[in-house]
Every structure is written in C-alpha cells, then in structure tokens.
Image (tube, rainbow, N blue to C red; front, side):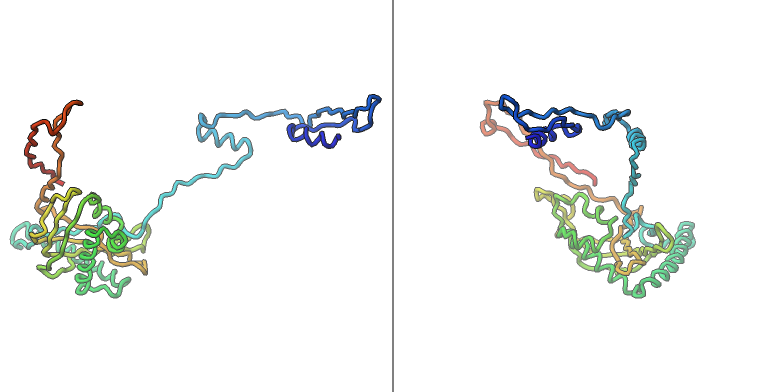
Length: 317
C-alpha cells in the first residue's frame, strides 16, 4: 500500500524528496489500515537564484554579458556575402569608338588626338591578346569574330523565346539582368538578316580581380549588321520598332571569359554605346482613358457617352 501511494505522490512533486516514518501495514483495533506518515525534506539550499530578464528589451551586448556570467560560450556570427567570381562587375578600360566611326584627317588637331588614342589602345590590346592566348590556345583574332557573332545571335534568339537556361550559358551574370529587365509582360520579335561588314576585334583587355593571377579576358567586337526588331506590350500593341522594316545597326559588343577556369567559355558581357550615337526612339505606351462616374441608378449603355480620341503619349525609355 505504501509503495502504491508513493507512486501516486512523487510525480506531482518532483523537486521534493519524501521521508517515510512508518511503513507498517498492520491493522488497528478498528480493522482499518494505518497510512504511512510522509514528511517533506529539502535536498539543497540555494543561496542565489538568477533573475529572469526579458530578452526582448535587452540589447545584444547585454545578452552576451549575461550569457558569459552564466558560464555559456557565445559563438561569434560572421556576416559573409557570397562573391561570384564567374564574371567581372563591369568593363575594364572600355573602348572609345571614333566619332562617326571614321578616321579624321591627321593634319587636324582632333585627328592627331584620335590617332594617338588608337595607338595607345592598340598597344595595350596586343599585350592582352598575347596573355589571352597563353590560357586559351584556340583564341585567334581571325576566327573569333565569327564565333562571337554566333553567340550574339543565339543569345538574342533565346531572349525572344525567354529561354532562361540557354540565356545563362550565353551571357554573363552582369549582362543577364540588363537584357531581361522590363520584358516580363512584353513580346519580342527580333531577327538577324545579314552582316553589312565582317565583324572584327577592335579592343582587348585582360584584367585580374580579387587576387593576382585571377585573369579575365574581355574582347570588344565591332558589328555592323541589318536587323529587325519589334516590341509589343501585354495588350498586343506595338511599342517600338517594326517587323517589316529592316534597319542598319552598328554595335560594339563586349565578350568575356574567365581564363583560369578550365570550363569557362566566351559569353556576352555588355555593349558600349558611344557618346555620338543618336538618341533612342520614344516608346509608345498604352494608357487607360477614364470613363464617366456612374451613379448607383445609372447604366453606361443608357448614357450617350462618346469616347474621346486618345492623344499620342510618348515616353523616352
């Protein structure tokens, strides 16, 4: 009986230990069983009881100090940001195209300045090409322009089809957001018709980043081609360009490769827009014309409301 009573009492008062003074189960004169006498005893006296603090109102330094006083070791947290070294963050020493893409007379002051700048850029380009060939033996300034033109066409074709997986293989992480920005609810129609002039390499650089020896190759290509482009909004209305109107386009495209990566490949990295380039065409956007404010008992069909003619609103992108 005493054992069964202990099993019932102990789970409700775990911190306390009980001392049983009488465990006899003899019957008294009345015939009833005598229950044991239980006296609670304290096991250990606590001289210090830590106070409970509200961690929400405490600062981080106070929480760490309280944890150290209690004998707990607080590990230091390091806020680290991921660094993507697959491509650079920009174009190093960008190529400056001559004004009008033509050479000026050497007798004039501007012509001499232009010629001096071309000699300086060409000397640095030869050194960069020699360094690129050390890591990429297949690189050649004669065969590379045709290969770069294929990458350019495939990248823009993947953009019109919104093929993200293929586009990531053809453009760098810096160029990707610039190409897809603002095209989520638009329809793109682009086609490459022909090359008016053979593409050629006009600029090359081989910079290093983060550490010495981490080399990247950047090659600027001059493309003079005939293309067609048309951009439609989500309502199917033409915003820019025309599919039936081919245009002559002169572009300076930059391709980049991580040279020390054995699995690296040449990808589009950006475009150089010269200062003398003509401004872009305005983008025509669809706007909503508000109708009349109807009262609860009126219907739109009952009103002889004439929709005003929309005005041509244009925005420069």
